[in-house]
Length: 83
Image (tube, rainbow, N blue to C red; front, side):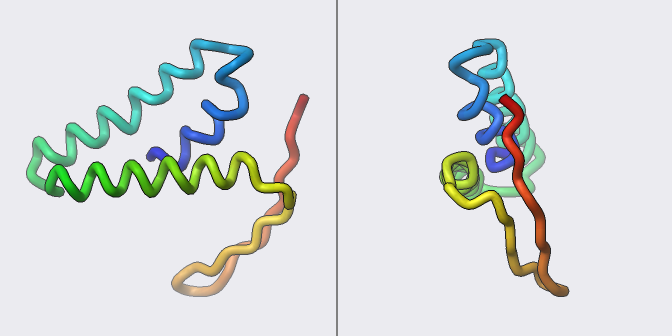
């Protein structure tokens, strides 16, 4: 969840401060996972840190091409920034 919302926050947060409210989604998800005893608190915190790092990296990478390996194959995509 952190990796999904971080690029939006990094890209649009300065111009539209309401976008920072998206940070509540990973926080809610983290609390819910710990509350139902699906994960330990350390798992959730490390996952959020890794997700945020990957989200920031993907928001600021210079290449518009996405090539990533998946368990059953690979994915190819293209990023376009609308400004």
